[in-house]
Image 1 (cartoon, protein in one colour):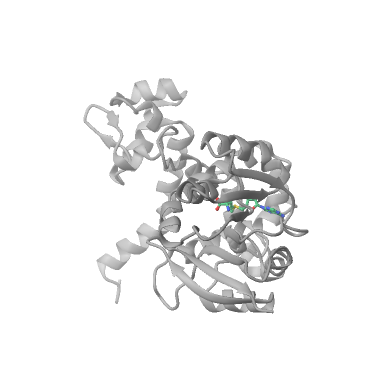
Image 2 (cartoon, protein in one colour):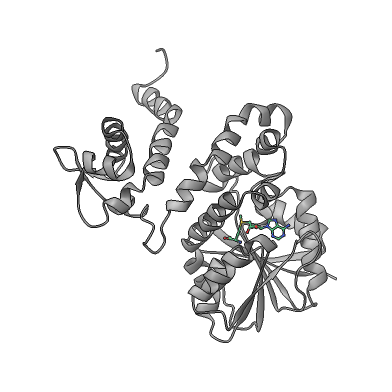
Amino acid sequence: MAGASAEDVLKLRGIATQYFTSRALYAAAVLSIADELAHDAKSVDELATAAGAHAPSLYRILRVLAAAGIFTEQGDRQFANTPLSALLRRDVPGSLRDFVLLFGDETSWRSWEGILHAVRTGETPFEHIYGEKFFDYVQGHPETAAMFDRAMASASSTTNAAVVEACDFAGFGTVVDVAGGTGSALCSILEATPDLRGIVFDLPHVEERAKRFIAGQGLANRCEFIGGSFFESVPSGADAYFMKHILHDWGDEECAKILAACRKAMDASARLLICERIVPAGNEPSSAKLIDLHMMMTNHGGRERTEEEYRRLLSAAGFDLRRVIPTSTPWSVIEARKNR
Ligand SMILES: C[S@@+](CC[C@H](N)C(=O)[O-])C[C@H]1O[C@@H](n2cnc3c(N)ncnc32)[C@H](O)[C@@H]1O
């Protein structure tokens, strides 16, 4: 075709079909193939029997994944794990199985089907399809809620060490993890900071899973769970208010309410520490730009923001953005203080 290089044609075709691999990955995660291969290679027939799958179809799925470095085919339709597919095992530290399940789940997939609805109307496809906001929906769907919490803990665990390395919590007595989920980030912070005490604040339906997680980390003596909604109030009097992956879930109006609740709970010297991906300017590739689209599909007003947008949001809520602390990952920690 005039003007188009063969390379460009291949590139665009590749992007158009990227979700084929993503769906294959989701199927392999649901079928627990990586767990089956935890100790040795297996034939596709063995894998299909264990997973209750149709062997010839499973083979076609696994060879696509093997071509992407997820599993390896060892001849004679035998497959083994690779470092990438090993991350799909449930029992490994930093497992991404639940992360894959969340983004492949019906709630994500159906929301993405609404991309044209989103772009034509500005509405959130999830709400258009399910008739309620995502975090209201999960409160009535315990299995999705548990899967979501596990996925968040799994996603958070891949960046917790970098946050702890970049940010010194040693000067604080108590930190509240506002909407901390089951406590993955806070437990890492507490492990690295022996004298610190922590409070995980989140919706009441998360309580049992959070308490189990915190106890599992051996931190029940220094970390408590308090249930409630950040649209009403958050626990007061702590030295630091940490918030990871929260403001990106919401539009500016809801963020203003969350920040107002934090502000009300904070003394003049308390710090607000917001951990998010910051959208870079221009054409720079960034996972923030991609996850921003996921927010557009699933979360009411949810969006990733530039540093300037965070500065404005904070200023309107009565905070000064003091500094942006980069980490070795795409996440940064934005430090803010009350400005009056
Ligand atoms: C994207 S997750 C982030 C969890 C955790 N901070 C992390 O990074 O792993 C958003 C969290 O916000 C919580 N949440 C949603 N609405 C809330 C509300 N009104 N009050 C308190 N927490 C809320 C959810 O239950 C969920 O744990």
